[in-house]
Image (cartoon, rainbow, N blue to C red; front, side, top):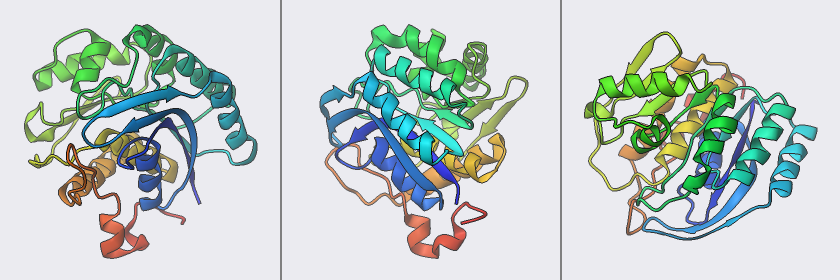
Length: 272
């Protein structure tokens, strides 16, 4: 069985963060592991409080995983401050981590901040160069590239700027900002566009976490980046379409729709 490590924050409401990552890993037939960097008191409507785990403890969690079960891919999510970013960067380099998918989480779906914006330079200098795939949404891409992103042409330009910061592939997620919920993958030479129908819904809590975790799962299984992204986009679109209408704010998605309907034989895996 393939193994994937999530390094991210914990969402007590279960729709995003570590909890969404583990659900996504299970839905893909891979074995999920975690290193928690922050404990977040949040629900679908608001973020109440954040408590960061110490840099030392983050490092020890990552060491514990690599000492015994070497991941085939790593998903990195919420890193709220510079000490957490530096601890994660140090350990990813030390362990020679492969198939690293980084979701540069800055905001919750309701708009509440999840990152200290005084740490954005650390994010760019320490974390971005470690990404095999970086998955910013439009607001995150605007903060990193320092430009407004309103069109697919802007997405291409921003992706090129961010790619030059050291990541191997940049996936900018259009969401509701770009027609056809279009995403743009730039691999350093070619722009790949992924379109799907836009689903009018409030149930989008944890979609970025879910998308990046699905990409990491597919990379662990052995798919190349473009195909991993394509499969992950199909997966998250289905999860949004069949969302269970939970919560009073931006509701959670349905991570197990395909699994409940078809069984594990149709999950995206080769050697379960």
